[in-house]
Image (cartoon, rainbow, N blue to C red):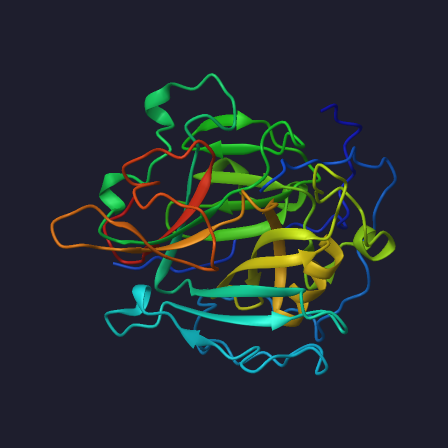
Length: 350
């Protein structure tokens, strides 16, 4: 599909640095409307007080699991909403690396909710894998296998979906020095360094770009600095963040986010929400910087892995029921599209 003029960055000219993490020993394809040419300013803060300045040891004194989350709407809340529950697979050795919860985020409708996985970045690394076929680029096939590297098999905890296909917005991607799609200044960017530090920020505000090991771009940040993107507040049904082939914006969505401490990484699996509702749910969750990942039924997925004795790791459990999967995907059978994976921190470096 044709793309219109690029959206100017919606954030003021402040610079955003990578979080300081001390290293340790669908049924329907996505459609993205043409971005508007008008400047979008960020709304008033929704999460008081102002975010603390980064420290050398941002995880010191920060708890994990995080505190339980008050349900945003009493009328639609279900039993257990906002209470963090341990997950067996990644925590089998007694170290709590991940927890999960659900929040009903609409004041009237119980069919709108988010399933959330919270990840302890003190114990878990985030990594990006380029798909075998997507995004399209003239890069040698051996540099884009669509597989979790064999050196990380023993440490593999989970896999989840990446972002939009290249033709749905031309959002940028770089991995291990190979630029698959050039960056867009207004794009929300998930970026990582080799030592495990990551950021979620608008590309034009991101510092240290030359030292990044990888980055993956998405439509403009749903939430940045604790503030929801102004366009979402003006146009709750905006298609900039994607819609179904039929034009619906109340669809399945996913997002990746950080809290203020940068210790907690959230993966959010959203049912029947438009992008505005997803952004508000992220703020209620405690996310301060959030990027929307892929959308629609067929392209949103999160799987935990199990490790059978003497065999490669395989998918053991899905975040939600009825997610179609091949147990050998991502490890033995290549993924066509890009994805993220989570590995135990402290294992041999990538």
